[in-house]
Image (cartoon, rainbow, N blue to C red; front, side):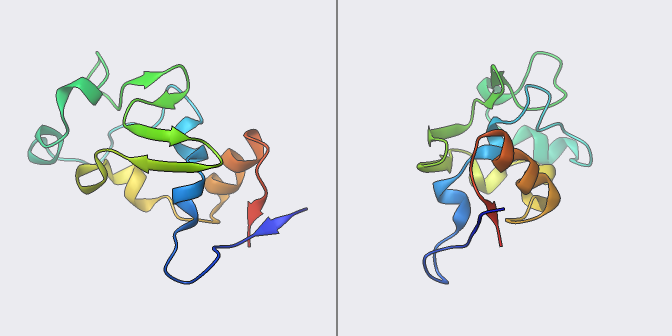
Length: 106
């Protein structure tokens, strides 16, 4: 299996990926956020059920850029807890990268 890591210690592999943000229309879901945290997320990014982020197909509406090339979260500072806990190279990351045909991180 191919593995890849960041080009240098200051570069996040997430900025050239975005696979986890383009994995499922049911992710990311709100789970442990309190009302104050949820109120910080702009309403245009929240789904109609108020249960998670609004997605365009399988892609989170807050994701900008092209998956596998250059991406960014447009609400990074107020992103949901599930997004904060997803780490480069963890099992969820590996699963999402595989779905997009990207090498698994080392």
